[in-house]
Length: 372
Image (cartoon, rainbow, N blue to C red; front, top):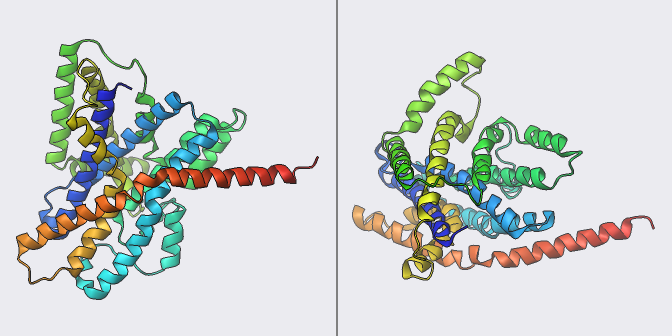
């Protein structure tokens, strides 16, 4: 992957994470009826497509073994998930004890803490038609999906040919329709990665890029998600005879997600073609350094922001003026995220080391138990 396109992907990742933060911030500060940035779900679709693309690239370039693939993926996930879960619980308990009403517009859930924690740490909270909230950490729902996508893709790559189809079918059966229905978005991203996957005509590329870019903007600005989901689901549910009471949770937007995901994927490939024609290397510039730094905090922004916003909203005095209070919440949340990222996301190599040690010990025990 050329370095300029890699920076571009980093910029998109960071921008999508910021949009999710702004989506939830505006929901809390202005209420859902006046939400300014109603693009949180669309940003997750972007994450899914990008994740498939980047991981497909990593597997091909780094030539991972099965063990290295899962170590890389789970060290990345757990380096932020474990601290985020404990932090969410602590902040929720303190925040609700100070100002329970401050959480009235947030889906904070402190009941059944053991079940919520276990479902979150094992990424089983979105199987089939269940939806177990990870306390107040609303964005956590997509991590359940993401981890399943990792496992499914790993099985596609490394399972024995003889058992592969049966294993993939079993995984889909375990996951259920909610997760399975969004799997094509992730696989679309994985399919997109090809070293020579671009069209040479610059003029044609520019026209397609502009068309897809403005189409994406139009969908975001005009709440295309609600419009397409409303009409599309009415038609599909009627044809299939499905009940609208089915809990598809975030997957209920799947018709829109496919449409949005395909347009974004096309824009991504065209962007690759255009950016790789640029001869100047941005990696060694100050801009490149800043983009890399911010992108390396993306996962922390995504998983830490919601409980932090709720906590600071609860503890800051309500006597503060509106603008000062909102500004304080934003600044405190962002500063906290960047401090936390230094001890979580930036320490994933430690989790990799622990996982390798654990896997090696299991392998040793297994070998010792085999009959000689």
